[in-house]
Length: 62
Image 1 (tube, rainbow, N blue to C red):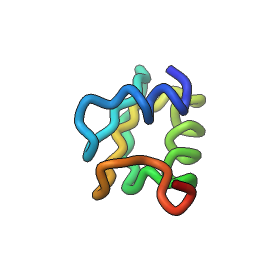
Image 2: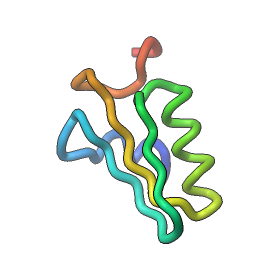
Image 3: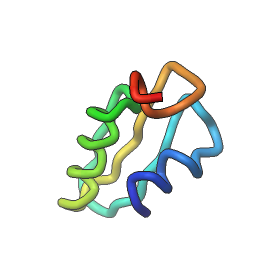
């Protein structure tokens, strides 16, 4: 799943899920920094959960 797809396809706005098969990681915030960190973790095999307090992703970029 790509970075944009993970952000757009989330069923629950406060928690976004991304796939992976290795160790787990939690990213707090779905702004550009959080999404970039999640993407880098996914590329090396982590299972990533992203938490966001707002009902949208993108942080200050929105």
